Image (cartoon, rainbow, N blue to C red):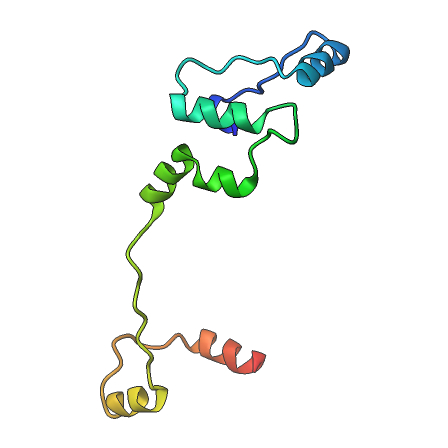
Length: 112
């Protein structure tokens, strides 16, 4: 999450040993443009104590995620079942809206 929001990793080190030391200590700074809610979630996710780290279920209920989910929520789409025989009968004798592509029809028949 930190990398997706900020474009870089939360832990930086001059070498692998320094990087590992920072990860184990859990010391990092949040980018200044991150919202307070995002910072809170990232800090909870990167808690070095697994017993205090936020769970996935709690992440989905966090205020930052809920705000993002609300933006994605859309009203349900009600699909209507189509009776194929009725649909075919309703167009019997009607002129097609477009001429079928003979090559496509042949290929479809060949494929079964």
